[in-house]
Image (cartoon, rainbow, N blue to C red):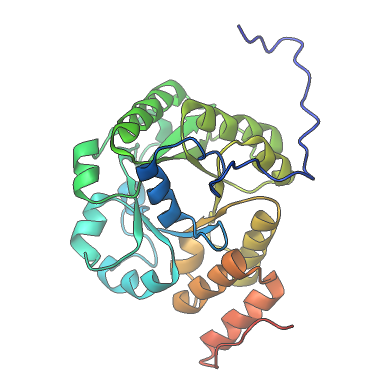
Length: 301
């Protein structure tokens, strides 16, 4: 069996060589069946190979979050400019028009709420596979606590979700949740992202860190980067640019969009970085122009 004693740190990530995709453009998905590939193709744009996911599942542990007081008013205007909606079934059923055409990444687990110090002590199925299919989900999202007391239970939940998803052609997005006493550094994310991928997740959501290009190279499936806490717009766009430049397959952003001074301008600026390779500076200028009511500008030649 694997033994960490005397283990040597990995060094050769072949950063100069692209992933071997064998005929299908989504990393690690070449040997999946047609239905799962079709769902992945709705999540990751064929042209760019990347995705902009809009996360608004915060209320299931935090209650009404700033910017999400009225889901029915705040989210629908943004839908046109993203590829995927990441939410709970209750939020979707109550507040999102069923006529919207974008893929849905359905949050199917529950955790402890912010009333508890240790969120990892929750965990369980909040929506089973039958209801996920009934919701027309394009993917299933499961939060996994690595290095926290709830690690074992959340890994078991991830594995069961992967199995159920495979039975119905639904990919699973494993969400890296960081234990409160752990550093968010390269060593941790190398372990956590690889752990979720090897447990069977077809997509991994994680955080950006210095050395991310090695984290992305070592993970055999696409990584989408979490936006995290609200920061100034130029910083959030800088995060997007660094992440995709270093191998991320897109972003799953929430607060840095819906808590922006101008969410509609911000979501379009994020899409410019992810799908059109805008620099952070270009995207921030694009954001400022839209926010000021100016004419949309194209990328400088």
